[in-house]
Image 1 (spheres, rainbow over the protein chains, first blue to last red):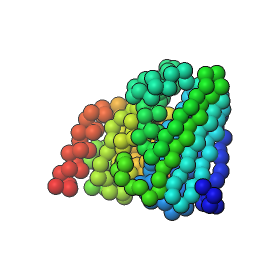
Image 2 (cartoon, chains in turn green, orange):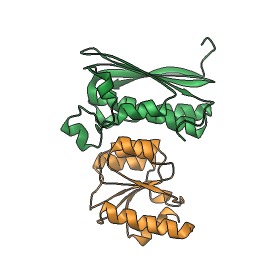
Image 3 (cartoon, each protein chain N blue to C red):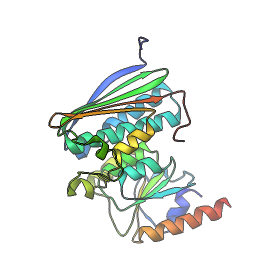
Length: 149
Length: 114
């Protein structure tokens, strides 16, 4: 896509810092609302950003979320440096989780994050390398209201 | 039925967002798993939970919930409270169980909209 984006920026996230978890997603939601996207699209993007952010906080040393918006779609990329995922198919199964007790006590780590991201995105792509990190790419179409509403 | 009427009917104690109790409550969601709440709750819902850490404020704010009710005598953590005040999210507390609160609110709001 060679058109000028409505927004293009990235946000860094520190692993293990649950105090600020959700802040990046909150910024992203505000930006998308200001652009004037529909509620349903903003809702989907906020969920995708939030789950991605929580995954980085829970499992990675550090990471970043890149947000790009063009008139047709929102692109969210979550790139982290961390433990990576040995078996992506298994990690995508609802309920599968490697979260420790501390994460679970806070109500995270229920094995729903990646499934949620996938089901709220129109296009979802995941790649991961053990010991290096994980890269998620999501696209949410701005003109397609139906999928999860 | 607005949030203020629910607060009165169930004798909830308000911990933050006293000035945000006028919103009309059409539904709610009960749950402690944040991903579940993120995926399945709706805008304007009242969220019933026993999680007390500050991440509940982020979830309620991202989902545009009308407020959070902490059950079973739970109190918000100090940083949760500070964040909720800053973001204007009503947090209410009750000694009742999540089961009972959910049932009573369900009864109140369905009766009203019938």
